[in-house]
Image (tube, rainbow, N blue to C red; front, side, top):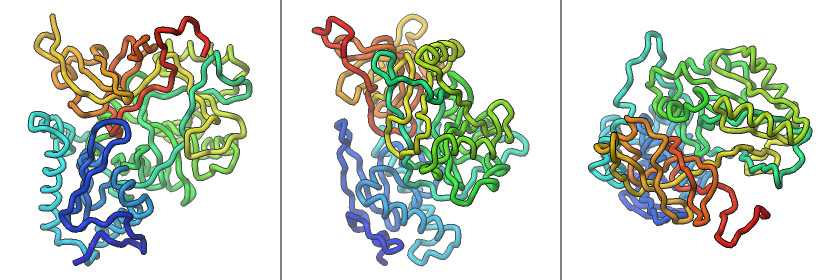
Length: 434
C-alpha cells in the first residue's frame, strides 16, 4: 500500500521507500540527523522529535523533516494524519494494535540514535510516562490541534546605549525569562512548531472569545528566575503544576498589518489590563511609552534589581513581521546563548561525588566550561551529552569565550548551538569603538 507520498495534493520534495533512511548534516556543527520512513510516518533522531513523547509518531515532525520534505508537505501530512486519527477513517493507516507496536519500536529506534544507553534513564525521566500526580480536578492534556505546525514569529534585534537608535516614543516592556509560545486558536506551539500539551482548561475560558482566525504571541511564564521550572512544567502535559503557569501575551500576529497600538488595544479588550486581568492565567504584558535613553536605562536597572532578564522596545505604529526585525529590540546587560554539551567534569569539595562543570561547544566551535547556576539535583543528573543548554554571561574574553558563564536551563526545543549576537573582543582591540 502506497502511503507517505501525497497529502491534499502536495507531494514531498524527497521520496523515501518504506524503511529507507537518509541523513542530514547540521549547518553549524558536526551533528548528523537520521531520518527514516516507517510505514505511514517518518522518524528523526533529533531532540525536538524524540521529546514529543505523548504525541503519536504519525503526527510528529521537526524542522529537519520540514526541510527535507518541504514545509507545505509536512503541514498537509500532519493535518491529514491528525484528522484521520480523530475520525478513525484513514484507510492507509495500520490497525490500532500495529500502530501502537510501530510507535513503540520507533520510539526505541529514535532513542538508540540520539542517546547512549547510559543516558537512556535521563530520557525516561522526562517522558510523560513518569507522570506527576494530578491535583484534584486537574484536566488531562489537550488533544486538539496537530502536534506540529509551521510557526514564524517576530524576532528581536539588540539595542545598546552606544549604538542603538533613539528610543523616544517606543513602547517599553519587560523581557520575560519564559518559554516563547504561539497560540493558533487551538493550542500552544514553540518557535519550532512543536506543541505544548497544556491542560484543556488552561485556555477554555477565553479561547472562545477570540475570532476564529486569531493567533497570539507570548510567553509561558512562572516568574522571574524560574526558567527551568517553566521548562519542566510545559514539557509535560501531565504535570500538576500547570496552574503555576501564566500566558503573558504581547502580540496578535493575525492582525499583523495593523499598527502595534491597534493590536495592543484588541488584546486589552479581550484580556484586560496587566494589573486587572480578565482571566487569571492570561496577562497582557504591560507597555509604557519611552521618553528617551535615560528612561530605558533607568527602567532596565529597576527591573533587573527585581530579577528581570531585560527590556523589550517596540517601534510605534510597527507591523508584525514574522522574521528578525528592527521594529523589535531587546535590551539587557547579560547576554544569553545556547551551546552543545560535550562532556561532564567531576567536581571537588562538596561536589566531589557529582558533576562540577559541563563542557560545552559554541556554534563557532570554541569550547568552555560552565560550573555555576546548577542546583544539587542538576549536578547529580546533569544535562545530557549532545543536548543543547541555555547559558548567560556578561562579556566575551579576548579569546572569544564567555566570561563568568552561568547555566540557565535546558533548551528543550533547540537542536543546534547559537552564539550571542555581539562583537568578539580580540587581543588587538584597545578601545570600545566598534
